[in-house]
Amino acid sequence: MAEIELQIDSVRQAPVSNKFTLMLKDKVAERYLPIYIGKTQALKIKQLLIGAPLSRPLEPSSLDNITEDSKLVSVVIHKFKDNEFFAKLRLKHGSKIKQLQVQLTEAVIASISEEVPILVDKAVLTKSGIKI
Image 1 (cartoon, rainbow, N blue to C red):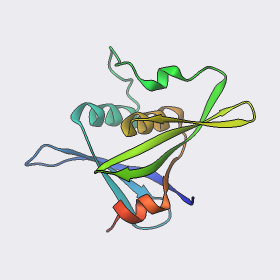
Image 2 (tube, one colour; image 1 turned 45 degrees about the vertical axis):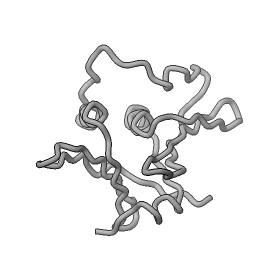
Image 3 (cartoon, one colour; image 1 turned 180 degrees about the horizontal axis):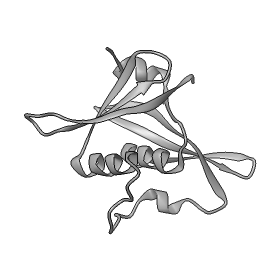
């Protein structure tokens, strides 16, 4: 499975519908992966991008289950099915690589917090990406 590195381009709000879109951009080409997200997730991502701490209280997250002896190395968007993106955290535990399925927005938040790359399966970008 070939993977392409993405970067966060923006979090946009549609003026009429008030829906939020997370725009991820291919680091080497003019391709984007638009992902609709909820208001709460959009605000969290925006806060992290400007360096502000997340407001309290934080909701429980599957990220809380990562042990101290594991290190997050990347986030992978690996599937798009029924209008939903699926993501995994790629963790290094000793010499082994483990993967943990999480919600896409949790994965993006983890990538910002831990400063690790966001990768996407090439087939997902081909199917759901757009060229601008």
